[in-house]
Image 1 (cartoon, rainbow, N blue to C red):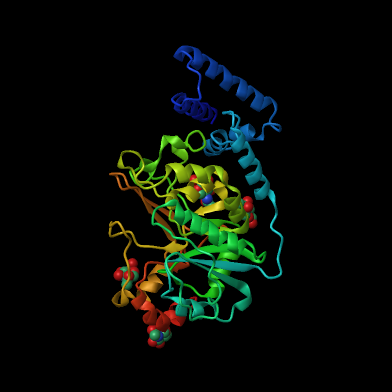
Image 2: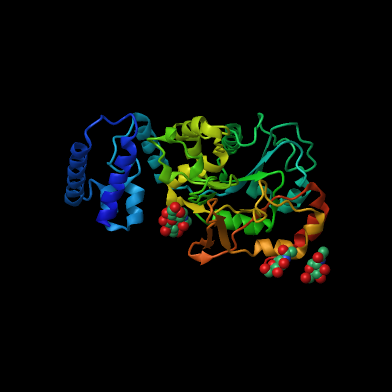
Length: 394
Ligand SMILES: *[C@@H]1O[C@H](CO)[C@@H](O)[C@H](O)[C@H]1NC(C)=O
Ligand SMILES: *[C@@H]1O[C@H](CO)[C@@H](O)[C@H](O)[C@H]1NC(C)=O
Ligand SMILES: *[C@@H]1O[C@H](CO)[C@@H](O)[C@H](O)[C@H]1NC(C)=O
Ligand SMILES: *[C@@H]1O[C@H](CO)[C@@H](O)[C@H](O)[C@H]1NC(C)=O
């Protein structure tokens, strides 16, 4: 445990030695200085376990706990910048705020779409009868949507252009969160696209999201070209390569986490500047797949599920996921998707390592998915026809 701790500390320092922040000491000298610092650090940690709770956590818990605390801003291994300290204080305080039990907690459904929503009729059916337990917000990035459902009329927020893969995607997500946060009854926030459909009924979705205290943010370590291959050292010192995560953009988020997203400008700016298409040497980074997965992995790893509740099928191995047409939509397909209880990640390196993990909530194995994409607009009639059948809980 301790050696892992020292080793981590050492590795960090080695990585940092390449950056401009470090005075150029001769190697043996700074290694001696470093080792002495580590020793002092450990002695202090043992002598003052309460004052140094981060270091204490490192000693008591596994090496995983060690990584979490020592390489994080909350550890004492690196002198933090002012901005990191401000950020850490704000995040820690927000996470400590207990959530006040509300009389009427609602789920905010945030639709990110170019224009008219092809599945508005299906969503209308989904929402029917649950009027006081949800709210709807629509961000239309290209053209003003034509709404047919009373739940959607008047729910368009002030929107802006979204360019696929660019930070404007994250900006649109933040705009939706900001609008939805203005209603104090909104306790959980779900981001959906125009090609997403519900695969369970409203009651199921409501209790699934409301009675867990976590956000369903997808996050995993992909050592391949579509994962850490997109990392840029310009993100140092705040974001190290070993923290850089990959995940789907389609999140659900509890209120605390949504407020933290509003408060963050430090990490947001790093991703805005250094995670974009056409970075150095033809490298492409997409902020919507990395910013929130990395940020929450760093600040509150235990507070996120690490999988997205929106199903998508990447098994065809193409640039875009599989899209379902009318001939694909059957009762069996929808039942298949809604009964999956293991989350799947595949690394993008040559090994194509498959990471399968059971979906566990409050200690119980559960179905992983509440929504699915991508469905072509032509499937709407078939989905409407099947909806009450495939969403029956059995
Ligand atoms: C969520 O609640 C469980 C108990 O209900 C608790 O053990 C756990 O620490 C909580 N997690 C977070 C991130 O608050
Ligand atoms: C998510 O992954 C992190 C490590 O990457 C882990 O610490 C955390 O416990 C995971 N979350 C859940 C709910 O299992
Ligand atoms: C549903 O799952 C079963 C078992 O995994 C599989 O054999 C079948 O082809 C699937 N059907 C559809 C429509 O995906
Ligand atoms: C719905 O389910 C019932 C019973 O399982 C079945 O008889 C009926 O044909 C199904 N309807 C459709 C549209 O699939």
